[in-house]
Image (tube, rainbow, N blue to C red; front, side):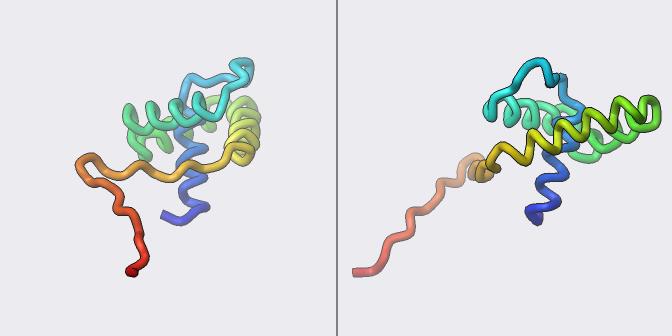
Length: 95
């Protein structure tokens, strides 16, 4: 997934999360909210819920998305964890 697509997916998942501006979320809280939303709804489910909100409440949804995009842009992306059961290999130079 490209960097832009990953940011879009994070924004979409965060949009459907329960996280609020008044929570003043930390980077860890944002990452957890994204994980929970993706686990609960999947990326497509998050997109469908976001589209529904834009249809029902366009002004509020646009304001929320502006806040989310600003928030995600301020928080450095974390590397994806290795899949379960797969240890990352250390790269060593041959001596």
